[in-house]
Figure (cartoon, rainbow, N blue to C red):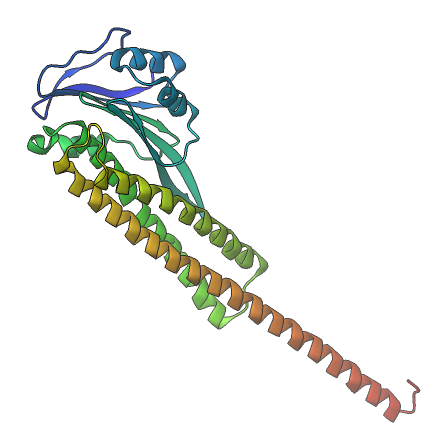
Length: 282
């Protein structure tokens, strides 16, 4: 089984553990289910589809694990996709979290995500008065959890680039350092492309009238949108820094090569004059 956690919540408090079945789930007032899975099987998703009347296309997307950030509406349910990101050396590794949201359920399907939702769940459970608002509040918590991880990633890359920039001012970069800058620039550009769709997801949840999202929850999603925009602006600045370091490195390398060529030509002229002074022909 790939079910990480599956619990019933009543009035914002965890009560019973839920098991997957092929029978439709019926919730009482002030109840909802929060189920978390990682890399689920087709059989598990089939059970969830039967239990909560999930749309076939959404189930197919969740199994695929290669979607872009988006919000889809299927009747009275939402299907939200967000991208996770974590830094592995100088490479940004991406994962995906698919979220099914209904009036009485939240189902998360994670692919390649390095961060568990356990701490997030514990944090939300400490505020039952907020958790009692239902699935839309959990959806906000998950998106906020994902977006908050972007900022440390960008700051780490920025620190590494600035360190290389200091080295450029002292001496020439080695070939591997130049290749590293090129790799970082490529990673930053790819990450920047993620920000637009992610901001669009948060904007839709904050501004559009959507099923399962109460008006009182919209300010929370606006806050997520603001976080995404702040990270996006940082990424733009970081891309400019990486580009300037890359261009400065190329310029300094060109100047070094020109000095080497000039030194070589000066050396040849010196020995030519020396030979002539000694009576040798050119």
